[in-house]
Length: 189
Ligand SMILES: [Zn+2]
Image 1: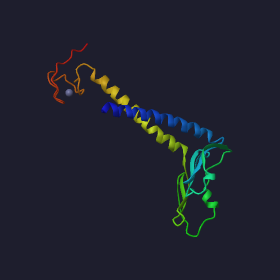
Image 2: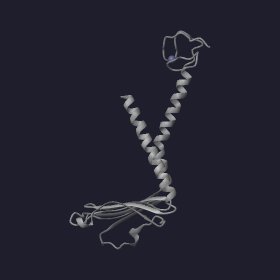
Image 3: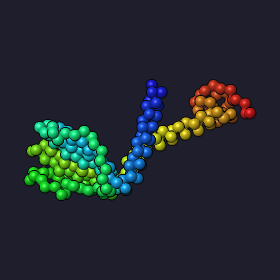
Image 4: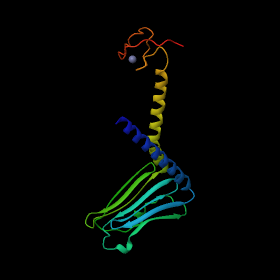
């Protein structure tokens, strides 16, 4: 079981590392062009794009089930460099739309919700560095644990220390006072 957890942790860390590298590539390229994926289906449309050092998502959640001619699978498009932009500001709307806007140090979320029509228009962005940092957390944790355990293994191999817990056994060679292990002090080389 612990083995399985460890392997799962390693797998997730490896995937996270790949993700982190991909994000860094997109990040660098975002200053030269804007790349986006967008798709439309019965639930409205969604898009995710790179925007000059930021990652931006925009979406409309609405019932589009009666207009299948609008549906489109994920499509990749490139454009000239485009900083993140709150396009909701330029949109008209309905009298009963409820707007909320949140912005904080380069992070933003803007939305326009209409309960009567059951629609949600939203746009938000985060700086690429924050996505890269989040994706780097798992691999960093994995590396730290690996380094710690190899340091511990090496310490346990040293003569004069308890092979189970690493406690100094020079004063009590027969029994480890820390973990109770009965042992003979291994002779120093
Ligand atoms: Zn011990």
